[in-house]
Every structure is written in C-alpha cells, then in structure tokens.
Image (tube, rainbow, N blue to C red; front, side, top):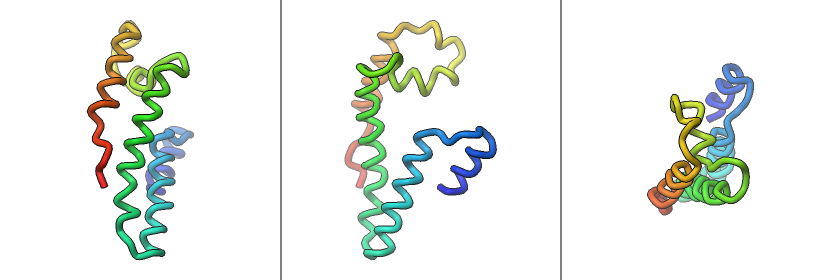
Length: 104
C-alpha cells in the first residue's frame, strides 16, 4: 500500500482519496492485527472501506455538484459528459445497493 501511494505521488503528483483511505486502513488495522495477534482486525478493512464508499456515494447525491459515480467515471468514459444527471444518480444508487457490506 505504501508503494502504491509512492507510485501515485511520482506519476500523478497526488494521491487519489480511495488509495489514501485504503492505505490508512491497512496500516491501522494491520498494526492492530500484529500487536494484538488477532487477524479479525485486518479482515475488517474491506467492510469498513465498502461502508465508507457507500456512505460517501449516498452523501454525494445531495452534497456537491456531481454524484460519486460521475466524479469517478467521467474522466474514464468517452462522451460521458453528455449523460444526464438522473443517469448518474441511478448508477450511484446501484453501486450503493449492490456493494457487499459485510465482508469480514
């Protein structure tokens, strides 16, 4: 994870928020796993990360100018700038509903 953040810094001159959150979770929960010798802490990482993404996705529907799906996919999908906001909101809703919440 630290290598990923370093590569992001070298190539992009910034760290994407999802990579930063994932790295923090791995470092904190991985340290707790090693210190307490309990693997459950490391297994919580996917669950916490998916819940955080779902909450941010839900909040982005009402806060900000664009839903999370649009912010993430707009630079990647050619011609996506012309898609209506309703379609982006529907895609964000589908992501929230279909994301497994209890991985650990």
